[in-house]
Length: 348
Ligand SMILES: [Zn+2]
Ligand SMILES: [Zn+2]
Image 1 (cartoon, rainbow, N blue to C red):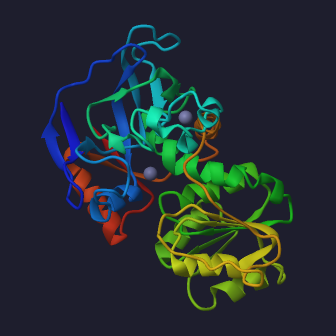
Image 2: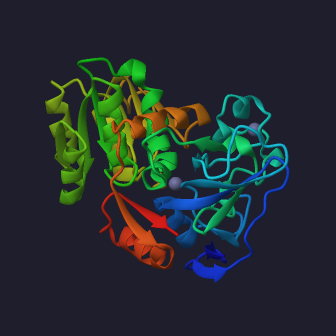
């Protein structure tokens, strides 16, 4: 079968011929219907090097996958061949306290995972291929009625990651509250939809691209603010001077973190989702009192079930542009150039 593989760090992925996988005991092979292209793949190609993470190329890209059950290994029950499914992307050890509650990204026994701190498309073969081997049937989640793999694939990361970040802040988002979304890209535009679908907060979206702000409005943002020197003041004014109860930074650069801290309300949450590599100095007087600052990484398996439900009911709908497997490099190029709207989905 054909697979888009990262052969080495600091290189472009290559479309090559590889053997079709067969499932061992407890494993599942999924025929891929769609694989999302994630901005973090660019970090894998451009910046990572030996030692950055506990694994190395070569492996097939694609950590955001959905399709149909193709083959079941011995002992797998509860799934049937041909059934549409999403693949839960982070693969932990399965038995530590975090994995037991379905929070594999925070696995506390990475040595016991199929690959430490990774998954399919992140150290192991992912979904930018005709088939993907999923090492444990618990990562295969049946799609609810009404959701096809092209819609479902981006929900497993571009949906799940902002969902986890929003969900943990639900208690701080009652009617009358304000949430700020910084960065309206692949994750941010779904973040706006999730806030609108699951809270009564007013949503302010921030980006430096006019078309991203248009997309935010399309996704339900109550107000958009162009990044720049006056953004903080504009957001403060829009909240009666109080600031935002929750700030979700989907960029994570120095400038966006500074903006986030400048517009957070006392007792608010500043959540860093983007892996832009920026830093934020924190001291007693540098951020409003009792602001909680946290990073989040991906989401839990139970949360994926909830996200798929929102997707099936049309309450969230990632904007997608589809590409064939041999056009995947175009998708990444457009992502690099900032011309891609929403999420690129590769359909093998
Ligand atoms: Zn991703
Ligand atoms: Zn674990």
